[in-house]
Length: 331
Ligand SMILES: C[S@@+](CC[C@H](N)C(=O)[O-])C[C@H]1O[C@@H](n2cnc3c(N)ncnc32)[C@H](O)[C@@H]1O
Image 1 (tube, rainbow, N blue to C red):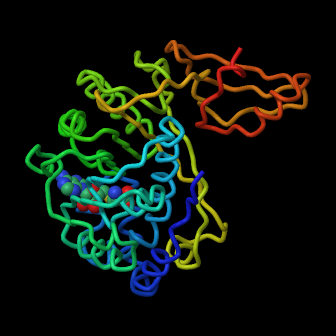
Image 2 (cartoon, rainbow, N blue to C red):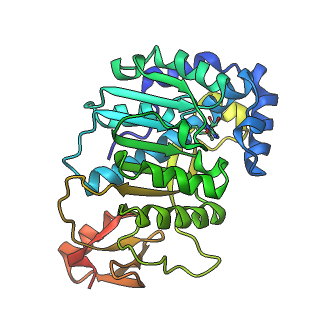
């Protein structure tokens, strides 16, 4: 598992630009705007807004992207991407996460619609490793096919940005990425709305021949009933600036996110046997651990690992919400 905290150089660059006395109003506008599902152009309308975003949201979006990249790494341990496309890049969060995750990343292209976000991405990049420092940070509208750069990429990431497009544009974008990027990682807020939209986007990708690497262990319809949604959570340490901007004293927050990891047809593949995706925090009792599962055959189910099977019980105790249950623990 990779470190889910911002790399020290990035954390320092963010803290330098975030003087809470200047950013309180911008941080309040941002929180209220995102809570009301407003797009960044309204919630984060200016330079103070993007600085507040970097201090208050970037640690959480970085952690969620890193966790999703870990899922890709678990499914394809040999993957070592060189070229990276980051769409709706904001301050460059996903690019930093991917470059930290895979030192092989050598060429980064960020596409971002907001001039204020691009300016911050450029400033922060100057503190980054060579691939980030040399990134091509360009203006573009990812809701139009003309907004996609030419060429083929090893990895494309769309983090917390599909949620700002209308659904038809989100579906077209992901369909256009299939075949243009070997692997595609999409991260969204962990809400029922975004889960529903991700399932529509998933269908569009499947129709283009994509394979799902995570979280779904199957390509059938989502078996969750209406009102339920597939998401998971990552714990994020809160910095002093973050606590002052967002209030409260708790030293961490839990970021709930939904995600999809896709693979384009033609990407090199090795099989992975699994017993299903763990849909909720496991319930651990003295005599057994109980897992709620989405199974490879497309059904929902439960697996119980009894404590009398000591090796299995120990292995099961290390698994968490969102992990894959190994096949030998799933019976
Ligand atoms: C919530 S921010 C996420 C930023 C970054 N990916 C992250 O995870 O921290 C959404 C970003 O998508 C950008 N965005 C939204 N719609 C866009 C569009 N049609 N074209 C380009 N960028 C867009 C916004 O300007 C904003 O920077």
